[in-house]
Image (cartoon, rainbow, N blue to C red; front, top):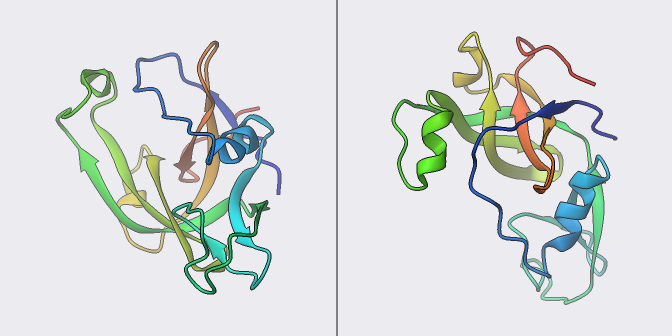
Length: 149
């Protein structure tokens, strides 16, 4: 379940807020894994991350890697930067949510040059966007984007 596809991303981007409660997620990305919470009492996988299980109300959890592939649930092409001005360097870009295993839906940028990833159900893989002195972040990539080492 390792993510081997690392793409250099030196462009400007907003920095993620790494809270102590979500630090294992970010550490997982640095280690090449997409980790999510799993309740140790009932086994429910969860995203968004939360301190208590929504299924059984347990506070006991672990962080476990999930398969780094999924299908597009929703996607939009941003043609104008809003919010943080750093996004202006990336327009146009695709952003969306991706259905993953365990009935999880994760948000992220979707890298695609052919436009296919704008369609619901399109297969995508998790890639890591890396740059010096900044946290590694995840994105999703359609197969039109070549794998990087």
